[in-house]
Structure formats: structure tokens, C-alpha cells
Image (tube, rainbow, N blue to C red; front, side, top):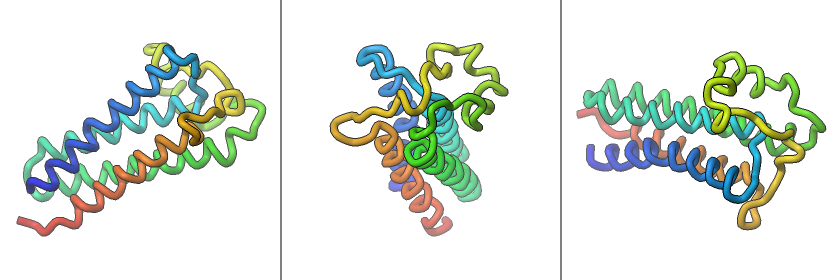
Length: 158
């Protein structure tokens, strides 16, 4: 169970770290988020919560349920990052996109505007960080999280 704990701990800490990094670049480097960026922030937090659930629910069933939820959220994050890069970044506006409607329906943009309010369109937010499109950084972390969840689920039952 030690490897599973390490993997789940990394996922549980990686999500909030990614959100903190996005928040930092938003304010320190003037990189305002688009709706798909904001949706990925929410997915990172949900992914971290699923990994934390798996850490707290110590039974084999709990591990598998938490890891399966984490895998599902990682898949959602992969889809959101790819959609942002290949579709939304080429559109002039993100108005009424799924990401904008979802965040708005939850009320997160009104309740926590500094963290969850989209401040620009996806085309305007398209930028690079250390030579890579910004959304590829989150894509990479979502892929690593998905692989970690698969590793945890593949562990033999004890």
C-alpha cells in the first residue's frame, strides 16, 4: 500500500499545486484565464478530492473507488485541455461554451471570482509557458494523474 499512498498523495497535492500555479501566473504574470482554463482549475480540485478520498478510505474498495473517481476526473481534464487547445483557442469567443455555462451554473464565478471567473476569451488567453502552450502543462498533469490512478487500481487486493 505504500506505493499507492505515494501516488495518491502526489495526485492529491498536485491538483491544488496546479491551481496555485495558475493563480500565480494569472496575477503575477498577467495571464488572465479563459472559461476552459477555469474549468480545468475546478477539475484539478475535484481530482485532488478523489485522491484524498482514496487516501482516507483505507479499504481496498475505498482505494479503488477513489482511484476510479480520480481517473474519471483526469479524463475530464484531458478532454478539457485538448478541447481548449484544438477547438476553443481558435474561436473568437467562448460565450456560452460548456465551460462557461458549467462554472456559471455552479455559481463559482460569482462566489469566488478571483479564482473561477473567466476574464478573457480562449483565443486571447492562448499563450506559451516555457515554450509549450499553457494548456499542455495541465494536460501533462492530467495524464500523469490518470496513469497514477490506473497504477493504484491495478494493485493487487489485500
